[in-house]
Length: 108
Image (cartoon, rainbow, N blue to C red; front, side, top):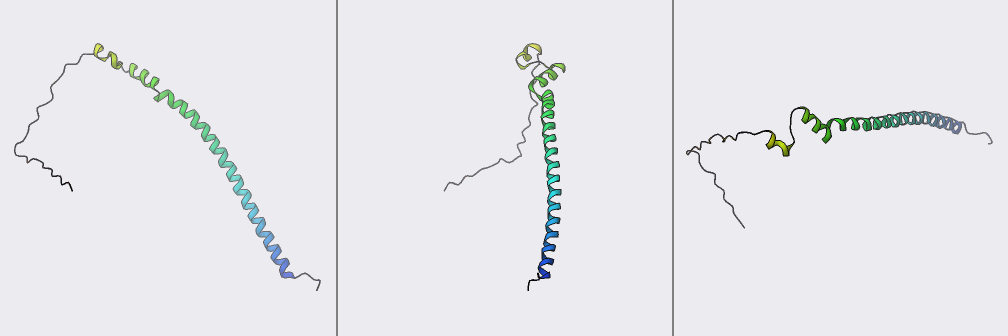
């Protein structure tokens, strides 16, 4: 009985084909991962650039410049630059027919 069993050869070839398919799938996933990592790196560079651009728009210096361009003045200089006549608040009519609100607290 020196002949090899044919079913063992068949199982070996089947497992070899399964391994080949899994290897190709693994390589496809590896390529996809590589692409995603390059995309992530590009997006991180974009974030750095966008944050620098954002700082030119919303930084305290940019807001101050915009405020001065709109005619606003700094807070410490506000009273010296503009005088506003104080206006009394409108009268508040109290209705005597409204019942009062009552609270009771029970301490135990």
